[in-house]
Length: 107
Image 1 (cartoon, one colour):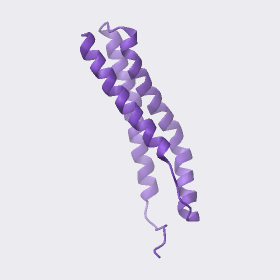
Image 2 (cartoon, rainbow, N blue to C red; image 1 turned 90 degrees about the horizontal axis):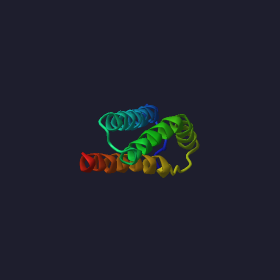
Image 3 (cartoon, rainbow, N blue to C red; image 1 turned 120 degrees about the horizontal axis):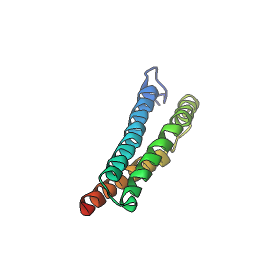
Image 4 (spheres, rainbow, N blue to C red; image 1 turned 180 degrees about the vertical axis):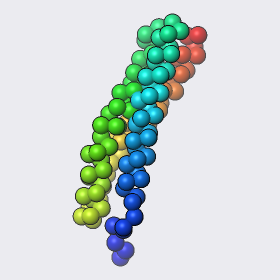
């Protein structure tokens, strides 16, 4: 049986990828929401972009906790089920698509 842990920096690279994803969601949600409000889109049409920004902020806040859980799982050889971060990222992505569609429809 091959060991689960190796000496590479996979967990560090994965954490950086999650930080990039979270920052992209937060910034794009804030930027698109702000742009929508500046051009006169109704506030209800901007609501999905607020959800996108919140998803990004939540993911960004969870990256440290997720990193520690993965480190403990890798060193301890225990299984890790971290689907919640992927669900939050997908929720942010779908919310952005809904917001963009609503933005197009209201303009």
